[in-house]
Image 1: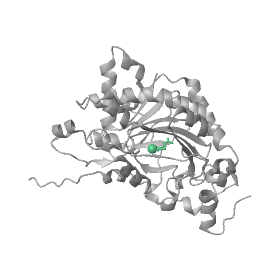
Image 2: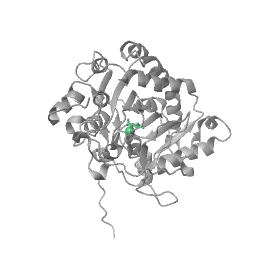
Image 3: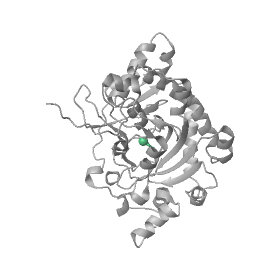
Length: 370
Ligand SMILES: O=C(O)CCC(=O)C(=O)O
Ligand SMILES: [Fe+2]
């Protein structure tokens, strides 16, 4: 039976306030996209632009420990400078774990709405778990076609006590495997900046970790909606597991060989691979050399999609600014120093709007020369 929401408020209340999510709405039987989800034309993802250039072939991470170290390090740095996104294979994570994670995400979101709604903001029994929908629904002109559960890591004991039963064990294992990889990649990126950081500083830059599970229900008209709107991630590095459905798009910020600046290209699913992307923090630390890529997610009408990002972000008290050696080299600081907690508050206080989040730390450099 088609749902009849008399006014906009009742739909908002059903989906957002009462925690039924997009899934709850779709499960009622939906033949068309509700008005609240219709994106303005310039935000819609119309064209399926599946470019599969050489730059996007996955990087074999196991080679970082062998004679090809320099080549692999260069590939990582190049990807971070040009697109801000790359995929890795032979990362050491068992394939079965990746499969279990996707299943666990389906298990979690497949539960009755009240089970998930128990983790809503303000009522969640755990300070570390939040279930929700869209990004900041109260501030968005059009809602995003996505439900999520977010699990903050504080300790193994807390994770196993407070994270949802449906996914806590696999999510924790995934996080453990990922952190070694994240540290390795981060060390490569920092070294190429000509900077040496103490291990304690590296740890502080990825001191807060969050495992999210995203669920994108089927949509009756994917061309009117977005799964996630244009945004960059706020943290240092993001690790992402996506399923085989596809729909993750990245905006080309630097010109690649074929002159594709400004185009959106798809990060096509590769079985067994993980996606890595640079976040705002690393763009700031590198004084703009590494790109916190703008990305977005399309919805589909055929099958629900799941993805499982790990966000590694600085500790709240950490001061983030361009590394002094890099500024010295560049002759200019493109960002000011900010306390990460303030950066985060600003990030979560606004709807997704491309790379606008970076403006919070940006120094506007006026060109007075010539
Ligand atoms: O679902 C995806 O592929 C990406 C999700 C994403 O960008 C995010 O959660 O920040
Ligand atoms: Fe993202």
